[in-house]
Every structure is written in structure tokens, then in C-alpha cells.
Image (cartoon, rainbow, N blue to C red; front, side, top):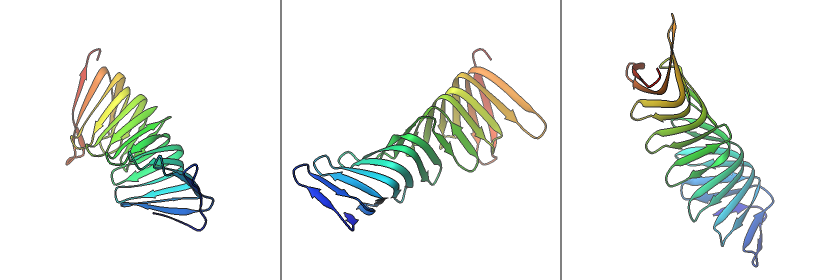
Amino acid sequence: TLLTEYLTYDRNLHLASYPYSATTYRGDKTLKSHYGYYRDRLKEFSFFENVEVFSPKYQMYTDTLYYNTGIEKMWFLGPTTIINKENVLEGTHGYYLVEEDFVFLDQRPFMHNETQKIHSDSMLYDRNIGLAKAYDRVDMIDTSYQIVMRGNYMELWEHKDFSFATDSAYAIYYDNDDSLYIHGDTLFFHFDKEKEELEKLIARRNV
């Protein structure tokens, strides 16, 4: 369902367009934009300027969004912010698989919450299993566990309280008195959420 004040529809091109703001409802999602198009043969929306997406799972704010309702996939171009219960994700290019609750971000994205900040060249996040994968020039700071992790590949498992970094990996574990620097080919981190502390650190090869 698309609601707007002014709409044109080209029957030959199967193209609907609106030059002014519109609100689109699909299932539990509400999508708003300044102007846009709908190609009914492709089942694809194009949203432009001040694009907002609201659902019970997340909110998304971006400049440009393409949404194919046939395969339930969204592509975003330009500065984009995705907010869910666990994290805030920011990037300028990527896609979101609606049914799978899966996000891919490219061009130096940023994921953060109250205690954690992660930068990398690209990143994917599977919210269903609580897995974030970060690729190339990865920097992660966790203030609750007082640790800094760096490497060119990193996995963070939210539900398993486990992370690892590899490819030029190193970590800085700090407290009020001192900082411990550890380098290795691969670093494994096991966390204790209840105590909010690093429970175990394992370093393998060239430590």
C-alpha cells in the first residue's frame, strides 16, 4: 500500500512515480521517502531523499534505497544508519536481506553499542545467530571487557561470548594500572558476561 498526494503511472513502462513525500506499508514495515518509483513488473521500489524504514526489528535511515519485494532484499547507497535492539550499524553501501535479518556493509562501515565499537573495510552481520564478521583493517574496542582487538579478519559471536581475530592480529588488554600487548597469527577471546571480564585469551603461532 502506497499513500501519497500525487501519483503518475505509465502503463507501457509499468512504472509508478511520486514527486512528493509518500508512505508505503508492507507487512509490519513502514517506508517513507521524499520521492520515488515503483516498477510493478520487477516488484521493486526506488526510494530517494530522507528515506526512513520502521519495523519491530529495526529502523533504517538513508539517502537512497532500492527494495525488491519479490525477493525481500533492500540495497542502500549513500550514508545509512540501521538501528536494532543490540547494535547501531553505519555505512555508505550495502544490502539487507529482510527475511533472514542479514546485513552486509561496505566502504568502511561502523558498528557500535554502549560498550563496543568496530570499524572495518567491510562487514556482515547475521542478527539471528548473533554473528558479526569484519574484513580488512579491523579495529574493535570493548570498554566493558577493557580490550582492544585488531586484525584483518575478525568474528564476534554475541550469543557464545566468543571472538577471534587473525591475519596480523594483536590485542591490548588494559586495566587501571597497566596494559598488556599480545601479538599472534590468531587470537581467541572467551568472555564472561556475568562478571563482565575477559575469561580466557588464547594466542596461536608466532606469539
